[in-house]
Each structure stands twice: as structure tokens, then as C-alpha cells.
Length: 534
Image 1 (cartoon, one colour):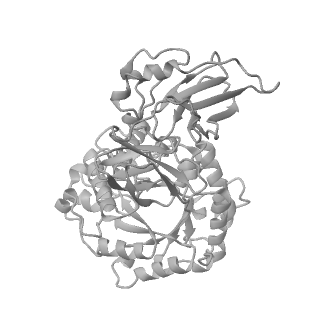
Image 2 (cartoon, rainbow, N blue to C red; image 1 turned 180 degrees about the vertical axis):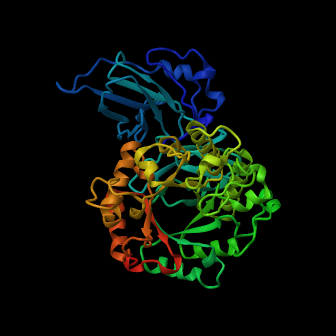
Image 3 (tube, one colour; image 1 turned 90 degrees about the vertical axis):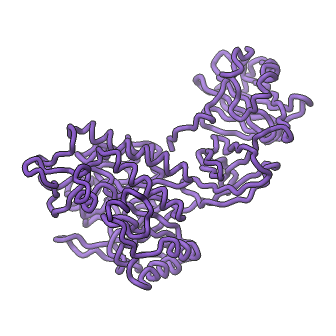
């Protein structure tokens, strides 16, 4: 995931063979200021030895990590070369193929001051790196490390404490301010099961996370407002491979007792379920909870606040799409703030993830008469939707949550904003989960090259090719994909069966997505398409 790095984690630099010129600029990210005076001494001890040509075909780089006071090797130290991380052996040595281009070397070890600096073609192939110990009794910082179950460091894990979040580096290590001797950490990373850990700050601790593939069904307002109906979805999760639930908390109405002032004042809060009680019940059944928020198709707010709505330029009244539904304008940042407040409130209640739907401009109706309150261009639309997503991402991550968004399937295939403001390449950096709506029925014949006819008749081919083309647009983004799959029969097309649903699931899993979700009638999920719980 391409993720903005907090300012307090910006890399500091050292230059091999040279003493650092500026204490302030070169102070390392995990270093207490008191050590800045002795750091130049450590850097002077970075000795450069003769170039060693190990192979006639490839030249190797060896980094030797030692304890500065004793000269003893530091086994297990982490050496990061660019984005790759290596662990030193018992002799404190790391040996890799020498980088072809200039890069950065960063050496870290819990209990020691970190060192980092540039490495180029003019530097020796053997680097001796002494590390200064960090005194636990005098340091105001504590450290931990986030790993997967195989021991691989997890970069970008969110570590939430009472004082706010921090993020793990490429070596999986995170830093905390030592404000007390113990604290409870909430650790999460995309594609992994989050954990709460009661940590003794005097000790360094590894925190291991297990991977999870989220497989979800949907609960709409009718199900949420009908006694006992939510048990239908819980029973599916307890007997099949389903482990998550997408829960409507806002369409036009907000379905729980929200305290967000904007929506309370608008009169759109009409509770039909107790969110806290529901979440407690779902957590008791180990069900991952996703809060679905319909953002800009909001006719109730449009009626109450026409100053925030899309207006009809011919009548001056509310503009409505082909189904007679009014929209609010995504250009209005007051709406951004209100929906973000709702999202963070949901996280405070205990939801694991926020999923935005209708996070776009309208796509149907007579848009030639639609007045959005400003110039309606592709750049303006893209800037608005991307800006809202970035602001949401920052607020949701500050709460330790994850952000997902429903995107038109064709948007992820062609990477064009398609007149709705959703440009995949612009939005992807601000999403933890990409929920592309790649229903085979919604494509046109010819959209999917591998479908020998209408895509609706080729569920496996349509899903697999859509995912493949989306990843080609944004290389490396596939780990974020959790598509919506079709569990319904579209008007005018052949009946969709459990076999068709299973073919879509197989395509998603064969491709290697981070999970999938079924969209259809919550009261009539194709349970026959699902594998039994193991």
C-alpha cells in the first residue's frame, strides 16, 4: 500500500565515509535527542573495507552489524535496502546482491539507536555498522515489532494507543512514547486479523498477525429492523465460509442512534437497530463488521438543505436522476465532514471497517440540466472525490480503522473517471480495500475479451479478467481487491444460480483477492454456493 508516512517517521541520513554535518537534520527517527551528540562518533566507526568480488557474474554487498561498546556481533539486526528487509545471522552479517543503483541502507535493532544512510556505486561492498545501545532506563521511547505468522515484518501496520496511532516501518518495528509502564495496543494491518495486546513497555515484544480473507454477505435496513432476521446471516457465517457482514448504517436514513450533529439537525436519524447490541452479538460470533455508508446519493439531506444539493438549472428545484432521486453535490466540503464524522462514530462504536457507497457524482438522468454549484469538469469531479477520500482515509486511520469504497467495475478496468469522479489510480492510495462492482450482468458484450458472448453468461471469465485488468492498471494493488460478486438475476437476463455464484467466487480466489462479498437479496443468499465451515 502506498501510504503517506507520518512526519515523525521520516528517514534521517548518514553518508558512508563522512561525518554527519547537521545534528538536527541527521537525527535518526527513533533516537532520543540526547543521543544526537554521540551519533557522529558512531558514524565515524563505519569502516569501509576492500571490494570483495564473490562471483564473476554478480557482486555482493555485505553488512556487518556490531555492538559499539563491545564490538560483538548483533545477530537478528534488521538491514533494510530500499523496500527489502533482511535479518543478520548470528555473526551479525547480511549478504545480498549489491544494488545496481543508488539506494538507502537502514540498520535497526530493538534496544539500539537506528542508523540509515545512502549507498551508491562508490561505496565499498563491505559495510561495518556499529550500533549504540539505547538505555531503557533513560529512553522515553518503547518499541515493538509487527510480524506475520511466518516471521515476515509487516510494513504499514497501524498500532493504536490511547495517545493516538503509529505505523510500523519496513522492518515491522514501531515506536511508542513511554508514558506508563503498560499499555493496551490495538494492532491492525490490511489483509490480517487485528489484535489487542497488553504490552509491558519495558520489554520489546513481537506481535504476530494472521492473514484473513474477508468473505461477506450483506444486511440491509429491512433485515436490521426485523426481529430475529439478522440471525439468518449469523447462521450463514457459523455454518459456511462466510466470516464478515456488510451492514447498512446509512442510505438516505441513518439506521442507528447517531449523534452526528449535521444529520441530527437534518432530521435523517431514524434508529431501527441498536448498533452496540448488534456489534456485541456479531463479535461474539467472530464476525468481521463492515459499516456501509451511502454518501452522495442523499435525497433526504437534499430536501432539507437544498444549498448542498444538485439543482435543476431549468426549474431551480432539486435535480433528480431517472428514478426521481435527488443528490447532494460532492463539491460541498460540509458534506465531507458530516459523512466522515459518521464514519469515525461507527468506528468508535466498534465497527472494523468503513465502506463508502455512492462515493461519486450521479451517472444517470439528464445531467445537462444538473447544476452542481461550480464548473462541472472531469478534473473538478476527480479532485472532489479524491479529496474526500484522502480526508476520510486520514481520519479513519487516526481511529485505527480501515477504509473501503465501492467503485464502478469499469472504472477499475479503464482507469478513467467515467464522468463520476472515480479515477482508480487517484483513489487507490487512499483505500485499504477496493470493492469493485464487477457484476457480469452490468457489462456489455465486447467489454470482456475472454467472454465468448455477453459477460453475464461467463461469470468466471468476467470476474477473473476484470481483476486482472484492474491490477494491470495499478501494479501491486491486487492485495486490496475485495470485489462485490453477483448473487441476483438481472432484469431481462437468464436466471443466476448458485453455480454462477460459485464460479465468480472461484475466479476471485484463483486470482488471489483479499476476499469477496455477495450482493443480492439478504433474505435469499445462495448458500448452496458457499463451502461449509471447516
